[in-house]
Image (tube, rainbow, N blue to C red; front, top):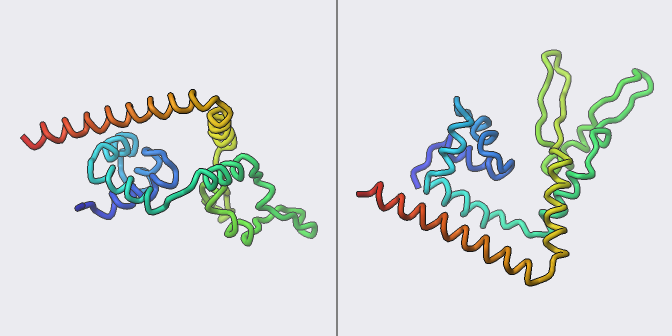
Length: 169
């Protein structure tokens, strides 16, 4: 795999957000909308993404725990109120503790004031809802969904193989 540093950075950012445009932007691509989609089409990048997923090996329980944290997160959890100054201040200890699970981004205003951006609660709730519907569905329904997904994955892989074969010719 002869991937450059930008491409490797894209893969790592993609594994954090699962958003190709956002990952391309953070990796430093000038046209992230186009680059993100295009990068995901490269077989070497797809292979690295799959490899990193296997290395990370997040279990379903871990995913549920993180999504639940995101759904329950509140910006107030990361702030403390100082009665003397009558201002809210960032609780950096708490930020460091939970940053990987619920804090999406930390930036600063031009005056140096920190701005915390949390992951989207609605999206976390949506994903949890999907999982719960699948968990509560009858086993035969789940099996059908898995078989449908397997067929879809096979179609995608066959299309990639066919495309690779035509590119080699």
